[in-house]
Amino acid sequence: MDPITLISIIKGGLILGALYALMATGLSLVWTTLGIFNFAHGAFIALGAYVAWQFSSADALGWPMLPAVLLTCAVMFLVGVILHFLLVKPFERRSDVVLIAVITTLAGSTILENGLLLIWGPRSKQIEPLTRGEVDLAGLHLTTAEILLLVLVLAILLGIGMFLRYSRPGRSMRAVSQNREAAQLLGLDVPKLYAIAFGLSALTAGLAGIFLGTIRFMHPAMGSEPLMKALVVVIFGGVARFSSPIYAAFIIGLLEAFSTYIFGVYWAPAVLFVTMIVVLLVKPEGLFGKYQRTL
Amino acid sequence: MLDVRDLSGGYEPVQIFQHVDLQVSAAESIGIFGPNGHGKTTLLRTLSGLIDPWQGDIFFDGERMNREGRRGSRKWRNFNYDAVTRRRMDPKKVARAGLIHVQQGNLLFPELTVTETLSIAVSAASGRRGWSVAEVQQLFPRVAERRDHKIRFLSGGERQMVSIAAGLIAAPRMLILDEPTLGLSPKIRQELCGAILEIRKTGLPIILIDQDVAFLEQIIDTLYLFDHGRISGRMSRDEMPDHETLMVMLFGERH
Ligand SMILES: Nc1ncnc2c1ncn2[C@@H]1O[C@H](COP(=O)(O)OP(=O)(O)OP(=O)(O)O)[C@@H](O)[C@H]1O
Ligand SMILES: [Mg+2]
Image 1 (cartoon, each protein chain N blue to C red):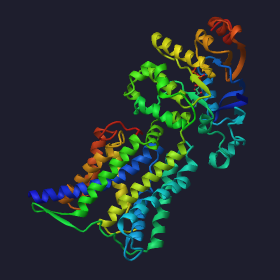
Image 2: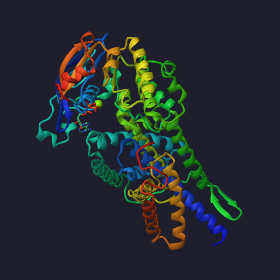
Image 3: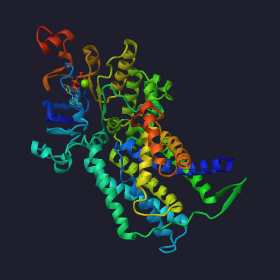
């Protein structure tokens, strides 16, 4: 393997890792605070991509990228809050909420995806890349869009981390995830914090969808494969800290890039799952520590 | 101020306490004394809304804390209990009305630091006047000392102190303390008892559960005896006998 190939595999792995990190963070945000897995997360990814396409594409509204992205974020946050209200909230006080939420969020996912098909049709679409420049670094070919994607994803993750650490609602969210009863007894508005967590998670999914829509063709089920990977990432890395799924995402991204190069596209997922099984055999609580719901 | 009428409840489907009547005025502190496992904690968790009462009403400061509505029949409980019967209690409402419950053996937020925990309490109080962070740090110097440590690295006594400190910040108008001195070494215990006495001196009414009659005597005006899920006796501080006599009253001659 010559160095240029090696570096471009690493580049591909990092970009995959960044996308997985964004999705896994949203997924683990809901898992740690509400204690459920949101199987509609993949549909959120697709929805974000389609909404952004509607705002930005020359065939639709044709707005500039920045307002289109910002408005998409707002829409996604709202969609998250509304779907939390419809799919999860009615069952929140039941002890078997985890199982019920699997069904309701799967149902929500199917409805969303078919809704997308109904509204935007089956034809593949693509979002215009954020920028069009190209850079040549010592024989390595990079587009500025790729660099921007990496930088933006890291900035977004940093932003979410700061939000959880320093802002009032963020801190309260961590408190709720660590001890719901104690938070309730102090008078925190737990239902509101749950809604914010769900909205924020949908927002990150939407952003992931926008990025994905610029590098691949969009279709209503475009989120299901990344959701699968994000699940793997969350299980693989554990959720002991906010950063654990992020590290795991980059490891998985690189692993996927290398195994695709070495074993081919068809075997890459198998390699991924075998690795995950081996890791879980050795460290059942995930690569980075305790398997528990904290933030 | 707190008016509990004919309250019954428990953990579905097991009833733990029944027909509890309890009146606490604004100037008064009460103690609840009873054997382990007879439902004192369950009663308090119902008062603060963590579990719904099966029957009866809770008024705090004249306002009804529980929503009206019957506990569903067994048949209805097979459906979504929340959707078909109205939810009866909202812990947020109780806490914001000023009835603050410091749980027994509270683990608080293991991964947050002491400072972060207190700041959560500040935002939970959201403008209502509670104690300031500086005031609770003065009351519990130990808490001030360990402010940058995560809760899970604190000792049981320190954690209890942080719990109470957070409760004080959350703007209490009545404070529920559930066995605050459980399992502490004598020295820490004394420190904590001193602090609780200080809190009492500010005029804040306290509902205190403790197994130590001598300590209860320092804090409370009225003692309620609680066994088998019922209030079986009520006595003022002057009528309070010592520990041995109390145990005999609860269990008879041999225990
Ligand atoms: N989450 C729960 N689900 C079901 N039953 C419970 C639960 N928590 C406690 N119980 C039961 O309720 C009964 C009363 O427990 P509770 O903790 O209220 O007693 P207590 O008087 O506070 O005891 P202690 O003095 O030991 O704190 C016990 O028999 C216990 O087994
Ligand atoms: Mg108890």
